[in-house]
Image (cartoon, rainbow, N blue to C red; front, top):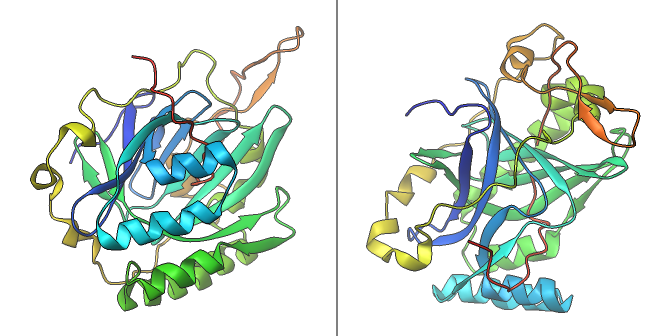
Length: 290
């Protein structure tokens, strides 16, 4: 599978083991190297989300998410169009990892780090497929404190069989690996200042999904070999030194500086590394613009 170009639009899809799409999000490529694919989005990026998730975000009622998982277990859900809101997102995803590391930004800068536990990626012609395993780790911007998120939902998807025993063992291994990376300041955490300085390229518009959406495809079209996600847990090798291959792979990320008129513009100085994504999207149920 080819490498993606910097600035190219790609699609992250969460694909259920039946082959049905659970969600889609349009992203821009920041860097594509052997250690990780780095992508980003900002408010206005197009997405597709289960309609019950969209209802949760519109009504502010998280209890509806439990219904969404029941629908997933029964294989009965519909997708609703929406747009990413509120934050800029930077996503770092090693292909064999059972997690991605994400960073969320507001107008005041880096809001938090967010580790999403998910299936290893399967490259597609227009992006990559994975599957969100529900539990997450939220980390303060300065890496000083962290907390687990959505353990209750993780217990539910375990009971429903959405997360299998194999998945569960892989998540346990991935939890330990991420905490070790955090302690050792490895991977994206090795250059937290560089990540904190990152901003969206002002020349890029919000990414759009391809015209062909899951709603227009049959389940047979989407059953592209979902069993490829059932991989054995694997340790992910990440660089820890300032001059390691990870820095080279992420070197297209630039810090930003003020232009003297209250705006942020790309710095033309030395290239710096970066990192990561999240399912904390607030997706309205209105139809995206064409």
